[in-house]
Length: 513
Image 1 (cartoon, helix red, strand yellow):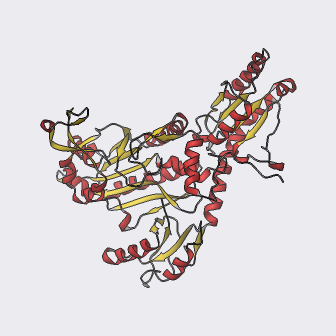
Image 2: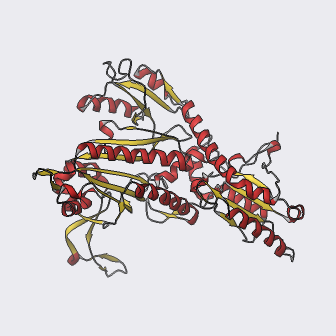
Image 3: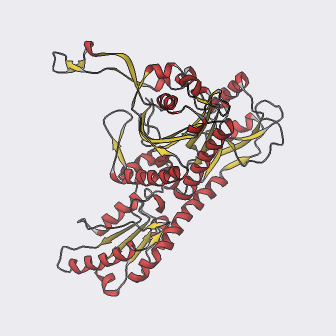
């Protein structure tokens, strides 16, 4: 078999971090903005995010949650009311202190000393405090509950080490915030949001995830309990792809979110918050990408089918374009994955092979080339992005009749969606290890000579406080973190790997992003 000449210069096995950066660039998804930690999201990358946003928004609204919007600037006093919350974000907060610039006399600009704000404003790192203020005004009685809100917004957390989509100083997300009459109702909402994220990741991102509860040291600042969905990337590291938090009455107490109960007394609301962000785009890249670029699951692909006419700048191009337009129309009339098929007829000038590889790197699920011979034979040349290579190291084209190709598109898209998920799930399951019984074994498992060791499921006694801190420090020395306690894990049946006490549950340990 001939050696395959891949579309990227860096292979995953050689340098996964550099491969990731090359995919982002080669797939034309994003670029550096000139501001540290901030990125320009280009049309293809933003189109993927728009698809995620649209599909997630449908799920959010189906649960009775209403969208709203809150300011990006939050008074510092709001954070000072919630000490635990501030401590968790203080080092990442961007702060506005002046409202005007003046010339410095040297051709530059400086903040006007006369325009210093009476109170600094924090650029939104998350919105619990400002939304809590609104809830304290909006909620008077138990009849106003539950209050279910969500906003799509940007947030700023001044990250020291950044990577596009995965960890940026500014990122896009949705943040749900709800208030409830009782603990039971709030916990139910927290778990509903978690399940919504799990289903969204599995069904539409083709991203197999494990849903579970975070340990005490990984909780959202100020939360009573935090839940997450965790995905395994191709390098074996974990990515926290979404979180849902039960906040108890902590934020309600700080913001005075009270209601008159059914007996006429005053009670604090139980609140929740939950969110996913553009980090999920990075998760899709690192889960589904290959040595030729990105592979986009059809459910979130801005264009599911791309038709490439092999134009030669000759009179016969008009007939070829008509032939391709007929194909585009026939495909656009099809339904796949619950929606009309998104199909693009790419008429841009350029060599067909160069255009094909552009779309391969972008990860369009189906690429169809049509040349003069195809038209004469009433056929097309069809390429599945998830199964790119055939025998002899050549792209694995099939050559169906035009009408047959159009009719086959829905089933092909469904099969690509399923195959990407199944491939990722098989890889994840094959890289989860059980039976590690000591810290020495754990250290050996994650030895420097192992490039992609995956995750380890261990049994533990759920230590808290200083005992947990000691465990976390031991893990930190191995560059490991706790991920979550799986919702559907087997019951504990032995001793805690860290304390030697009777284990009460199972938890995942991994290196992570």
